[in-house]
Image (cartoon, rainbow, N blue to C red; front, side, top):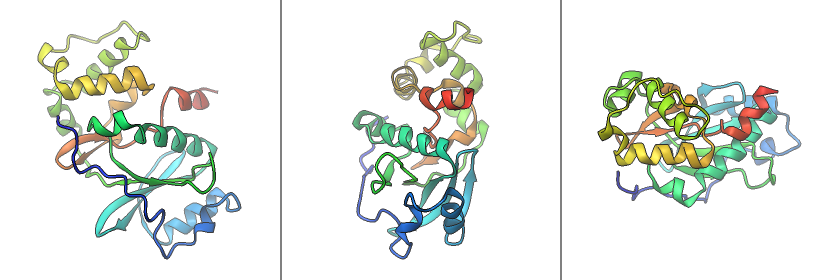
Amino acid sequence: MKIREFTQNIRETPLPDEWDKEMFSPRASFSRMVAYAKERAKQVGRGSSRVAFKIDYQGRPTVLKVAVNNKGITQNQEETQLLDDYYVENIGITIPMIDHDEDNGDRITWIHTEFAEKLTQKQLEKFFGGIDMFKITAYLDSQTGKSRNTVGDIPKEIIENEYFQNLQDLVVNFGLPAVDLARKANWGLYRGDPVIIDLGYTDATAKLYQR
């Protein structure tokens, strides 16, 4: 896969102009932030730590992820670091980041990304030669040294595929738990290709949930 020529980090409008930026400062509670966003945008996803909203930006749909607790803040920190990495940004397998909260230091309350269409598990697995994603992620996990169980053989032509190699590099070298990539919920279609839309759950944030 070629480096995505249209990926841009346009950092001009941190939040919609009409939104009150103070609502996303340390002085606002998590529940107040989320309630404020819900009044102004459509909720398109929710996890235990963050809520995703669909907002219009420069005439196109985009996504704003808002933290709902301190774990969400940590996930935003991890995801921002990954999506802001030059290498990760240009290998073309992650959703492009438009902007993120830069007004509150390390307390990153929100992240703004491009919008990806939903895809089915079958669509996702078709991109990997029709192989079950749990086999794919088990193989990737084995490459990190955390597991020796590859759950079956992965065809050589899949392993040598440039997209697969980039995914393996992301898992092995950037602390992204492979098992988290088995579910379609962590993927979306962007410009016709599957991309990872949630990178907040890393080896670092996983420790927060294990406590």
